[in-house]
Length: 254
Image 1: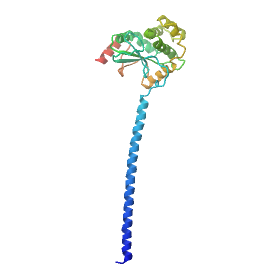
Image 2: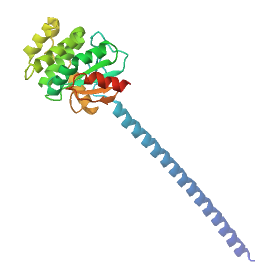
Image 3: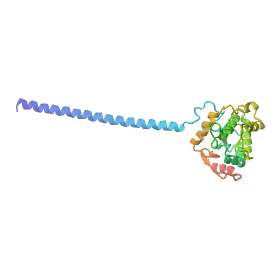
Image 4: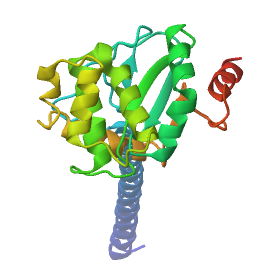
C-alpha cells in the first residue's frame, strides 16, 4: 500500500471520528436544550398557577384603608352572642348577606330575624352580617347609603348595630320605599346611637369598603339577597315559613 493511500485512509478515519464527536456534542446539546426547555416550561406553568391561585385568594377589600372593626376580607361583620358588632364567636359561622333596599331581605328579616338573633345568642351559630348594595348600589345608591350608615354604627356604636338594622328593615317593611339621610338619622337616634356617630353617616367613612364588600360578594357568587352560608355551604329554605331558619340550621349541623 502506498504512503499516499495510507495517509488518505488515516485522514478519512480522523474525519469520521471528528464527525462522530461533532454529532455526539450536538446530540448532548440538543438533549440539554430539551431538558432545559422542559424545566423552564414546568417552572413557567407552576409560576402561572401560583399567580392564578394567588389572585383567586385576593380580595377587593385587601387594599381598602379604613375597615369597620372586626370585619374580614370577605366583607363580613361579626356579631357576638350579646349582639355587639365586631366580635366573632366560636360557633359554626353563618354568613348572612343582606341589602336593606332588597324587598326579599326585608321579608327575610321580618320572618327570620328574631330566630337568627336567638341562634346567635344561644351559641348555635356565630353570626356574620354582610351588608351589600345589589339592588341600588353605587356611591349614591340608597342601598349604599343605608348600608354604609349601618357599617358606621357597627364600627362606632357596635352595641346598637342589630337594633339599628332592625329599625331600618322594619321601616322598609312598613312601606318606606327607601331610607333617606333624615330617616337614617332618626332611626339611629331612636335606638341609642350617639349624635356624634350619627353625624358621621354622611362623611363617607366606609364608602370604599362598602363598595369593595359588594364587589367581593359578587365575586364570591352572591347573586341576590338574602344569601345564607353555614360554614361556607349554601343554606336554602322557604324563608317565608316561620321556623324555617332554625330548622335549616339544625338540619345542616346534624
